Amino acid sequence: MKIGFIGVGIIASHMVEGFCGLNKAHEFYLSPRNTERAACLAGKYRNVTVCGHNQEVVDSADLVFITLLPKDCLEVISGLRFRSEQDVINVTASVTLSDIGAAAGPVRSLSHIVPLPFISARTGPIAAYPESGLLKELLSPLGTVVFMRNMDEMRAAQAITSLMSPFYEILHRMVLFAESQGMQTAEATAYTTSFFRALCGHAMDFKEGSLHELAMEMTPGGLNELAYKTLTASGAIDQWGAVLGPIIEKIGVMSSLNSSS
Image 1 (cartoon, one colour):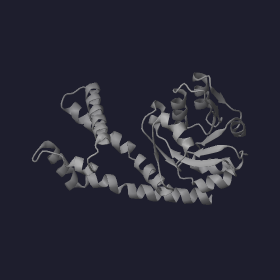
Image 2 (tube, rainbow, N blue to C red; image 1 turned 90 degrees about the horizontal axis):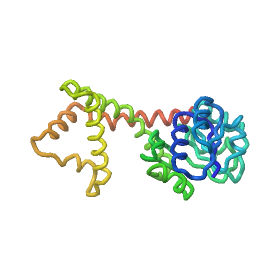
Image 3 (cartoon, helix red, strand yellow; image 1 turned 180 degrees about the vertical axis):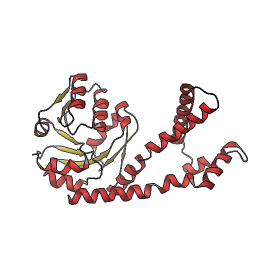
Image 4 (tube, one colour; image 1 turned 90 degrees about the vertical axis):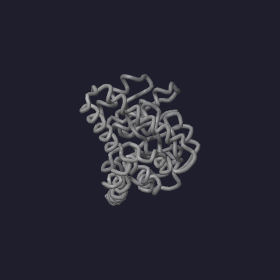
């Protein structure tokens, strides 16, 4: 398949890396908006071409990913001529599919996905809407495709992704604590990351009830109970869910601003 990228930012670069690691006969056409990243990918992979301008990307591709900054997205797209037999997949956060469709004009299919940096290693979730055979076939080799029923669910998935930075900071604090107890940084990091990876794997395999039930499987008077009660009493655990409300609101505001601009 001939695949184009309008915009070559961090996520687009991770996507190209993930695709190229599959050894499939895809051809990639990149816009020149980020010269350094695009040139790096073209130098690394023989099936990657940097085009002279965005319209050349559209003309060369059967399927086009829109991976632009929200503030630039609609203006750039409205200046391009898409074909009615093309598939367009929006990756730009806070820009609605209806606005993308109005700017791009008639295309064969229009969809929205939320990929994450792990896509370069072909792991992790990829939220997608609407459900289609095209998205399943194209994206399944790159991670776990989770189809959403509507854009409200897509925004919820997007909000959850905002917890990456806080999660990494928690790991960092665990490493700092281990260092304060005499562990070396390398072994503290290895232990902490392996521990949380195993926790997530166990949670994914848990089929007997809700994750809350899994959290309650702790020895009375034990260490996990002490940690759970202390964090709950301080409100720290509640904040992880509470912060998603403002995130959802911000996504909505950004969508409205981009739509009216």
